[in-house]
Image (cartoon, rainbow, N blue to C red):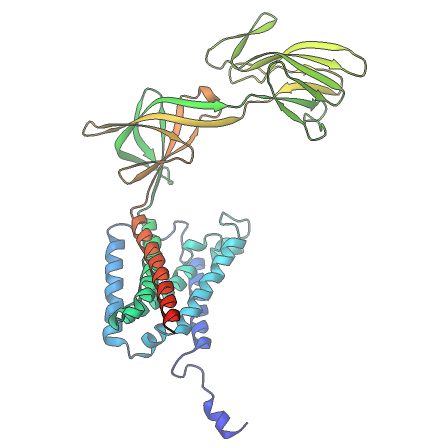
Length: 415
């Protein structure tokens, strides 16, 4: 090697730090984080709630300004405002996100996975430390561009400040995120909710369930193997929606639906239409065996919590059954009662939340044992006060991208 080539070589940790040093520091932070997971971390994720998260954010931003203003010439701060520090941190964040996609984020049978916290990456100390480094790089670079403001840098500033806001709000907002469930019963006001730790939370308003409504599809006809209890194969047509007057074919059996009631009760040797609690659907069917022309008539029912199901044994091998009706949709007709006497009416449906005083109120579930006769509706309330800040950050990034695209077109036209 010549003397000139030898002179251009740079020793490790020699100023300025490059990619090797940056990844070395990044992996060091990851190892430190995994060490904390093994020896320090608890089952409860580390979060910061109001007002401490606000104080932390203000203090963190102030610290970044101080570091840039008075310590920008130090080795560490200069490194944090350079490309290698940003690239290494975002690469390691991406690596941990990939691990999150590979390893299910639930309790694992592997002690190795549980001890290192690989099944809870978003609250893992390794992830938080690397993300903190990336946010520090992002914050210092944004402050640097703002301090050296030029109109040509507006897109860059919007992108970086927007990303900084979205990520910090997402991290600090976890402590203020509320996810509650509340049981509401028809004709009774309810205002005591339950959080994830099964603690009772008194709401500043109450729910009054006027009616819980379930719409069902018609039950289906199925041919069941008497030995295994499973639905027999029928050339891909194993289930048929029951409709009065229709004829269906199962292997060598011809089945006709003579009568059908959505709600019914057995009186004597047949079913009649009744409208009472627990009244199940029923159908009278005629089954013809096409191989020997034998015919059977009987009533079948899917049953309910208060009535037994009935099936028809059509041969030694098979029986005809009615399946339990599938849910089409369910909803809750509720009133929201406030302490100042206000009454707001709404109908909650699945995936159609109602927004009220910072909460998103969702239709969650019901008493599945009672089915459509349930007088219980379970609602979910989600409150995330930091969500507007995240949206502001996202809109800033979109605005920055549009501005940079516009500037790029303008420069191209000028050239």
